[in-house]
Length: 128
Image (tube, rainbow, N blue to C red; front, side):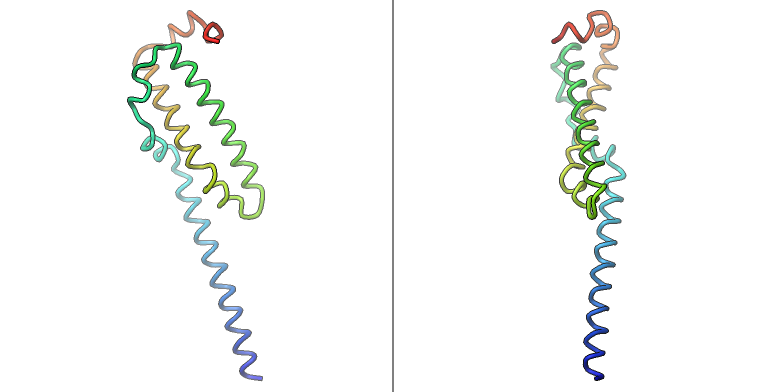
């Protein structure tokens, strides 16, 4: 009787240890994901759009914003399911961070070149 109780207690301890490990892993991934802006900036190439004119920058920004919305939607859907935070972190959050970094680079480049006035004059619809 004593041996079987010991085995049950070891099984419970092992299950608890696995649960604690899973919680800690999820918490650490969530902590990493919370700082996606800095990660995205580190992944973005500040010279990537240097040869683009203002119209091309506006089109690229529009596409990046669309990609960001799509990824945010996918992350939101994934996080609704059990274990979804881990799935979202593995599947989408790197792309999301990279896209956010590209958006920041595009906005900075457009601001540096004072593109807002040019794109307002010509209109982004004329690009298509």
